[in-house]
Image 1 (cartoon, one colour):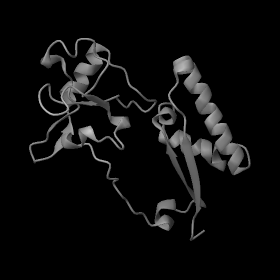
Image 2 (image 1 turned 30 degrees about the horizontal axis):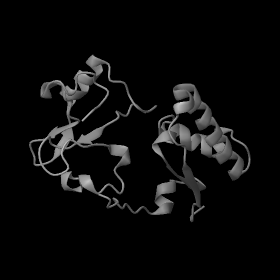
Image 3 (image 1 turned 120 degrees about the horizontal axis):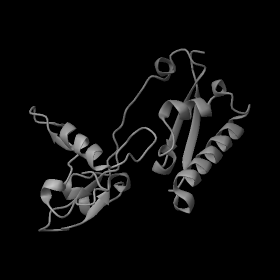
Image 4 (image 1 turned 90 degrees about the vertical axis):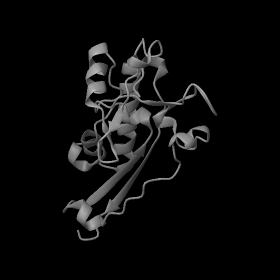
Length: 175
């Protein structure tokens, strides 16, 4: 469900559900809700155009009328009965194939406060030598985080979200 819709709780018809059934037993993005969110002025949360979303439990029953921001779901106990899980989705890639001829792969694991201000491609460019960044790994990451801090201050003032990141470089085993 999208939030930041002023009349969201006044009428169930105003709740903008992010997903709808796809007719094949699964789920897909609800295009009508996305259109309505644009119409009522629900902005995007990130530089990439992501929408802020939350899980709202039913009005009646166990753990009723609770809200959880989806980015805050790791470790949440109460919302597990509504589908929130702590279990990670694990993906394995062959690093040599993933590098696609590049000398290294860069993994950036960051909080939503970082991703609010970067498109993925721009972040990787800023963290690699090709982006014209400083010559050392430490300096590139430092500049990336300082740039993120400045973007956060510009967008949110003193209320910028947390900015935490871990950056790991993997040399291409075939290079």
